[in-house]
Amino acid sequence: MTLWAPSVKVVDALYQARYLISLHNGMTVRCDGEEWALDFAQESQMIDATLKLAGVDIQRVRHQAQRPTKAN
Image 1 (cartoon, helix red, strand yellow):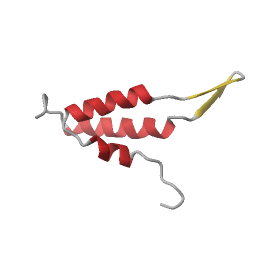
Image 2: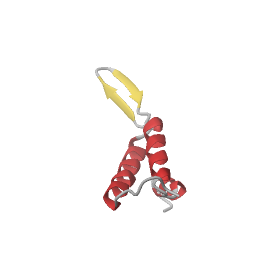
Image 3: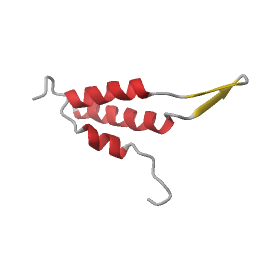
Image 4: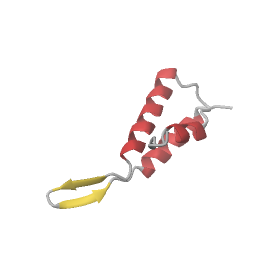
């Protein structure tokens, strides 16, 4: 049972955001002689929790967010 009924546009936006941050998660950023890895784990967890609350199968989201490999 869901506690709220999200609109399709909201769920689509969350899917898109989850996918885009998964593409950039772990990338190395270089600026002014410094470098660090992007870490969007907390944001991904927040989106997953929101999608779960909306009744969306999070495993499907995680599977779709994986980067394609050369074998795919």
